[in-house]
Image (tube, rainbow, N blue to C red; front, side):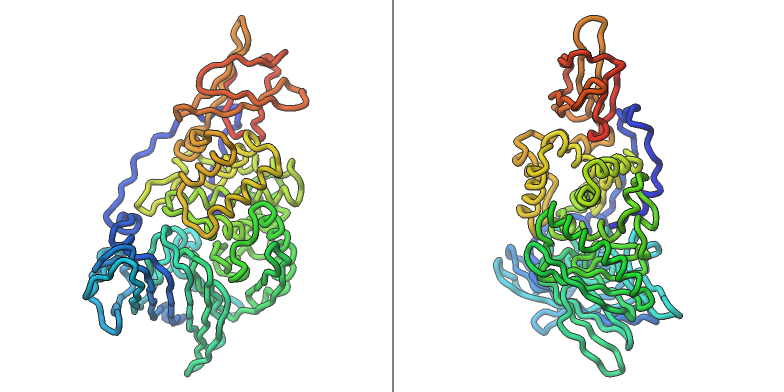
Length: 555
């Protein structure tokens, strides 16, 4: 997903200076277009998508596409009118139903279709949208959406799509909302002679057409969200491997530029199998055995396209050769391979229903980096890596964004979200086997589902037996950190409490007398409580800020 912006973020002051006050920001203004894109109106919930057949021809020289998409659906209630989505710069040539054209209207990037009869609840039906034009060209993919038209090795064409956030409707007609994932999909892409398209799923057939063009048919046998659907076009070289996974052999397919095949074999060989071993250990089986696992070299940095992960890290460790954590541990592995592949579990298998809850994708996937470090180099290395992630946190806005307007929250969803999960682990589930079981159970419980923040938090509440909602709310819905306030009065024992924005906030505070063997977990609330720790003074108080991302105030 879109990560490089985090390298540009200013580091916060040290943890000894608490972040206690929320930053004031002007409320964002949203438009009718935002609501049409982000809101699940009756015209979108009236039908459940079962199958797409996207069939497009790519004109590389003209930077244009033309084709169709078949929508097969089940009616969830009686209706005569529905909405699908396609950016307004692309022309809807016609909408066809049972061999007849349907009337349609357009408003911004929404298209409204009227049927000649009532589609009754439970009925399975289909319509096909024919469209074409010059799609949006991304200026800085993958941080903005659209097509990327590039060249390599003497001017050879190199084309890709990346549209996370903005959505698949920037280049193909679909019901563009994360709450409804299509159950399966056929992606047919016709490209000029000498080029290969690599899309999601498995290649079913390759057809040579008149005039020298080639059509590639890729079938996706699992639910897939719209922004994951991708085409990648070049004169690719292909090589393969197999991973002995929890569910048996998993096919690994690599598609790279011919001039880079030597570097690709070395880099992919060093990173992919250890990554899969770590991810399966912590999160359970790879979620898409049926569709396989692919890495595809792209002219943009990377994206978690389901079963077809986009890779553009130029065969180097780190993130474009840098360590986002500043600890050195991030230079021992290829960031894009580990992070983007982690999204197969969180983002692709488990998908947030509303983009406002994208922390579900990013917090868990960013945390998967630390778990990979732990798998390879041990717990202390992972703790250092997690602590290093904090330098990217801005505390600029809530992690959860506004709902129903297709708007993400703060980019703190990555590193602050990762540190939140580590805080939950160290504060409530310190037993490694139990923590692993909790994460694997999360993957199993919400396998191939779209979910909400409430569902994820409820799962943690149930599995830990603790009321963690206030903790999640503090980190996800507020910009401020909880602050541990410890007072040493002239007489009597020390007193401690939490300063927090969320009423009812409670969290075990991990403290000790400096030099003691281990930290003591004090169950604190926002009300002062005495601290029963013999020998504790203002001078020898030590707080476990290495594992708990909190502020500290000592008086």
